[in-house]
Image 1 (cartoon, rainbow, N blue to C red):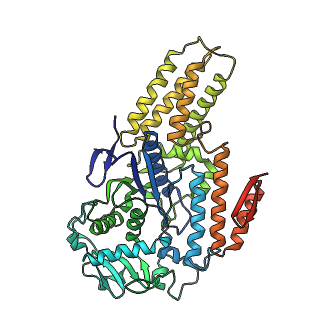
Image 2 (image 1 turned 180 degrees about the vertical axis):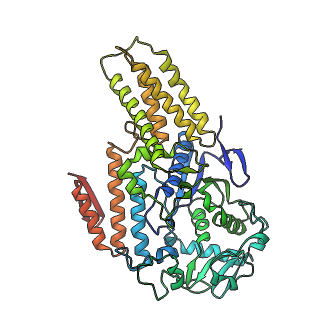
Image 3 (image 1 turned 120 degrees about the horizontal axis):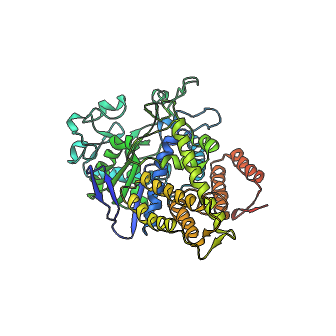
Length: 494
């Protein structure tokens, strides 16, 4: 059975056809204006499982996920607590925390995590291309995309241009030809009144324009939100990519605008398959920082552990909405414990003197033989993790049934069951079976230390020496000796 996916662009279930052995996968990443919550992590986890499954099926996955580190929400937090005195410092703080959370969730690393602030030349070049092709126009130092010039505008969200409400801030509307036009470049810095919309009301208001600005052919300013992903995707993948993943709340206007500006600039299809992850709900509302009904990833990891969190997400297919509650997380905890107990029991029995060559457990052998086929069918059915998890739980039941009350065990059947847990539960689902999870693997520990050192070096380059020293002290406290030299930092475990 080949992989089929639900493509938002067509509204249809379609057979996935890669353009070769490579899959170009772009994930709309986080706007780093706060620590990540479980709603953000749901998108990350499902994108991670998609990556893992495609790799398991033999594809070479080129996975790019951006950090939006230029945004009025970030600028609004300037001077708050110890976040920093400029937009770059605030963004750096939350990028560091986001990387920590991603590693804590045992996500496979993307090929690259591009940041908006690093890609201004590519963004400006893309905007200039749109101006040159008469798809965009300058107005008072800002640049807007003219939606009337792109015939297919609205094809992702199934909306008609004439029915759309005005996009962007109130101050932009007098500058635009059409209410639905959207900003590619914004003149000047972030206005105090714009920052105030996102600033903690308990803090002193910002009285001067804030945030980073850059020179451009249209004057000093900042990039619009939508243009950033198009520029970063084309820079690190190609003008046409295979799969674009994002939250369902981004279909309009963000992804609709990505399509318009990208295809208007290149004349090529931007993304062949659009996969949208349903929102995480809590008491009927989506989990969001603005509503204050969120649970930070770091806190959830401390309270529940990575395997319970991943098992929670694996209970619902990516395209459906999911509810977070005490009951649903407790159910995930129970499921993970069932899997973990069965795996550990299989390992103990397999490695005991009671595991024999000539004992034959037909039911366990049959279940283990079938699980690969059934698991594969579920995952190729639009990444149906719910059904795939049911197969893994079925394997746990088969193991328990074989071991219950037995004096001797089928060594071969147990070994194959262990391998199935590690391949499907560990390699594909990212759960901590054997050495395939986050625990007990020296290479993973080394990767994590190197990641902290990379963050530390970035802090030093930004002049945040106190933060860099804190990271070194934290590593020392964990038994990691760091040595600085002219060629960079090296480390060893004490």
